[in-house]
Amino acid sequence: MSAFEVNFDGLVGPTHNYSGLSYGNVASTGNQKAVSNPRLAARQGLDKMKALADLGFKQGVFAPQERPDVAALRRLGFTGSDAEVIRRAGLQAPAILAAATSASSMWTANAATVSPSGDTADGRVHFTPANLNNKFHRSIEHPTTGRVLKAMFGDARHFVVHEALPAQMHFGDEGAANHTRFCGRYDGPGVEFFVFGASAFDSRYPAPKRFPARQTLEASQAIARLHGLDDGRVVYAQQDPDAIDKGVFHNDVIAVGNGNVLFHHEKAFLDQARVLAELHQKLDCLGTEFVAVEVPEANVTVEEAVKSYLFNSQLLSKPQGGMIIVVPEECRQNGRVWQYLEALVATGGPIDEVRVFDLKQSMQNGGGPACLRLRVALSEQELAAVNPRVMMDDSLYSMLTHWVDTHYRDRLAPDDLADPALLDECRRALDELTQILGLGSVYPFQLV
Image (cartoon, rainbow, N blue to C red; front, side, top):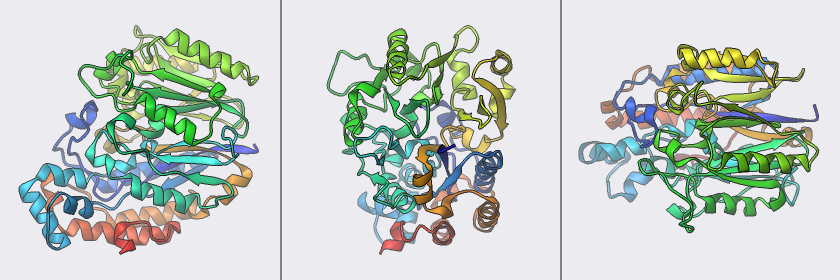
């Protein structure tokens, strides 16, 4: 292959906890106040990365954030030394402290939107960090995300890292969780598929009634302009508001695509027939056949899809042909979902293999296999320009598992977030991590 889709998985941070911060994410709110195991969470993620790398897929690592975010707490009026800021926040506003301590950057599908060089006007790979404006605990991520992206994709001949969109609800952007790219070849031209929940300026678009629509049409359109995309190879689709109200907070909870294949639920999009027809027509213009694999409500309900995270899976193209679908263990535990998957791979269609991973620590906070990775299509030359120390291999896996075992706690309860020692542990761990991954100084404590 002369080009690859590389998955950069988010490394779970040392403060992984269950604070139930993500309203609209049923798993997140349902496990609020449970005791987490950061060490196990990080090891589960690393094991998935290593297993996929061993299967021959290109796999990278995306570093977590510094948490708690003391600077964010200071902006909210908490004063004193770093330890005093944390203690005061814990006493006066524990919910705010929990938000500032979230390890949510582990879900790297929300880190940015990526357009490969085959789609952009200047022939470079473009990244726009997501502002994640809908949730405070995620809205504070993008400055560090931008620095980490530049440390990984620093060669300006091949890569462009934009600033995040304005941090305002009209341009709410949730990154690649609402973006898919279809193509015949990873290094050829493709069709970029932007999915939004509502429009900020056009009242003709319906909106969900119970849960928020996190991605706006206007944000998606702005990213397409920033990345220099051709309007003739872009498709916009609106999520079904009823699906959002059932817990489909991002498109990657109800649909996933790869190559020329879209695996999606019957209730994924408004005016679904028109959306599929437009994707078919625009890919056909590129000489690529579009294949839609639609899961009927009669086989798997939206509620079952949300609970099992059937669609928050990875579709990976095998070198010998066909595709693997990577699903969480929760899919195997759901009888109807597993029955559907067994029937799917037996049909002779493009998805012909299932791989199951135990990601319970992430799943209990509302993120499955697809949430954990940012997809970047790269030519051989572009891949050679990526910081090589973030690419998974036996040596990096060994170093990172030792690093996790050395620095991570195996138990973190909500009350533990007010322990100032947690910040010191996080900083020591991340300072060592930047050396392992060759990132330089990307964290606030390293920049002072």
